[in-house]
Length: 149
Image (cartoon, rainbow, N blue to C red; front, side, top):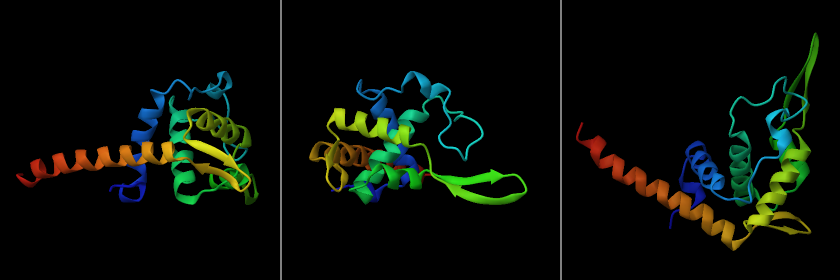
């Protein structure tokens, strides 16, 4: 059985983002094209599909670290704020982005709310494990071809 832990995170998140794009429940809000992802950032993200990538990354974090809440996810997506000549200080990421993505993932049925925080549902676990399994199968198909070179 292939799980999320068996696939490198960068490959996995890209594939889950592609799958989430197909889901009508996951849609970036109108303001997503203009918003920064935190006060520590100077510009909005350059990737047009950043909303789906962030949703995929949050879904993976809920799977691996759950249950998680908004504050914990804000800390995970925070960074150093440039304060000019003063030393850098850590600032948390945007809470609104995390909350909206949590709500959209709940609407798809992949995440459930509990008193301890958001947890992955069996449907969400199945979705992520199926994506991981398909990635592993693709890697197995490519590997024999590379061995001939």
